[in-house]
Every structure is written in C-alpha cells, then in structure tokens.
Image (cartoon, rainbow, N blue to C red; front, side, top):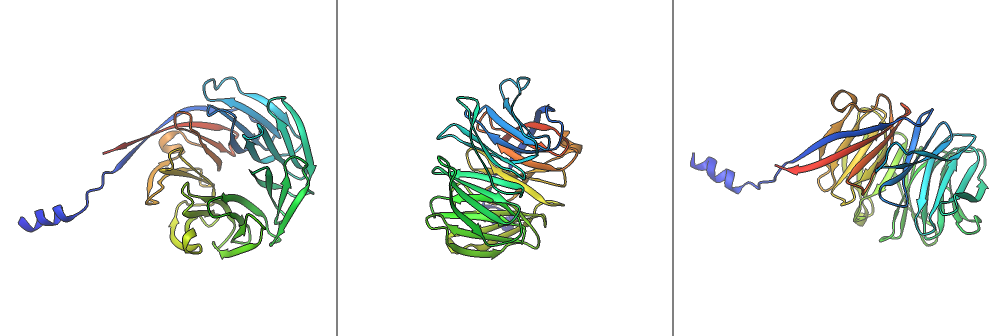
Length: 321
C-alpha cells in the first residue's frame, strides 16, 4: 500500500479538459456546396461562398439576416477579408480575383489570372497571395493589382498558404505532396519538405509560430518544428479521410480540423491531443464533407461549411475536471 501511495505522489497530476458542444443553428442560404467561410469587419460578422457563385454576409447576432454580397458566374473556393483596407477579396474559379470595398459595397478592382481554379487567397502588408490549381502562387500589389512575383515550383495545385511574420516565412501546401517554405522578403525557396503521401490540403502556423501544421488527403496531421529547420515533431492519424482545413481558437489554446469523413475534431494546441469529435450521429453534424472552418472571437462560436449546402454554428465550452 505504501509503494502505491509513493508512486501516486510522484506522478504529475494533469487535469482533464471536458469539452461541451452545442449546435446553435444551421444556415441554409446556399444552393450548392459551401466551400469557404471567412471573418468579417466585426467579430460577429462573417462571409461564405460556394458552388453557386454566391458570396453572402452573415451576422452571428441575427442569423436570419444573411444577405447576398455578390453573385459570380462560377464557383468560389477562397475568400479573404483584409481589415487594413476593409476589402473582401473573392477568388473566382477559372477567372481571377475581385476586390469588394465593404464601405462602398462595390467592386474596386479585378484581375484575370488565367483558367485555373483558385484554392486560397491571403493578404499581408498590401500584397495579395493567390494559390492556383496550375501550381503557381501569384503575388500582387493590392493597390495596382500588378504582379510582384509568380512562384512556379510545381505543376500540381498550390492548395493552402500560411505566413510566419516572426520568421519571415511563407508556407505553401501542394498537391504534389510537398510543403514549400519561401522567404517573405525575396521569395526565395528555403525548404522543400516531402510532407505527406498525397496532396497537402491545408497548412497553418501555430499562434506562437513555433510550429507549422499540415493536413493532407492522407488523413494525417503533421507538426513541423520551425526552429529546427522544419523537422517533423509529430505525426497524427487525425481523420478517416482527407483533412480539408484547420483553424485555431482566439486564445490559441485549441484548434479544430475538418474532413471529408464528415466530422469536425477539437484538439489541444499544446499537446496535440484529440479532445472531442463533432459528427452527425452525436451532435447532428454535417451529412457530407466539411470543407472549411472559422473559429470566431464572438462568444467562441465555431462556423463550419459543408458539401451538404449548409453552414453550422457551434458553441464550444471547455471545462477542467
């Protein structure tokens, strides 16, 4: 009995996190798959777009007041809100990008980028980064829409973009299984990582920018140590099918992933341990692939977009036990 007590006292006690999930609402304004959701000018506002070409604005304080902001002729995979200019950038597949001034509620710029699909759009310091299905990443000046640089390192799709401003790095995930790291100053190639067995669908730096997380069609999450030249820290079999996207909570303590397996999963951002599964059977989740996530700073509400043409709003609560 004594040895048992000593062993117990020597072990470190770590409280477990209990995660409670409540489905707040389901929005059904789109007439086709919803491919993307993006933050808006206020924490309670967000945008959505999908296969119907509709770009809609929603208010988490009044979910019945969704309205159409734009209607395009082809599908939209990527949206990017740039707060510094209060501009929404729309990536229209097979056409190019469109800039919508949200103060004036009108288009203030557009440029054709060829006949490729646009998988991701990001903005940093007045530079627009566009990831295309032809493998190129176009970097444009937001004021003139003139091309600054074109990164052409693969003929397979460039799928996802993430920035580490602390390290001056641009990470791009590709469908040739690679993650490539570029210098944000001169866009030189710094690292070329054979990250997964098949397409890399999402890349994201952690809030402290110590790690880069990649998610793939091979259903694995991989954590890369930035300070150790992107050596592999951990590999996690995270889903049954392709991982489409991931996003962090506002406090940076947790992140969520979504997948073609129809589920959303909640993870501890420090230990990379799975905390909760959100799916149709347990939480009336989505019936088909979950494509994009947006973890808002508005009451910690999570927004998810799916091939089932719906957007779901989730309340996630964490309690230590």
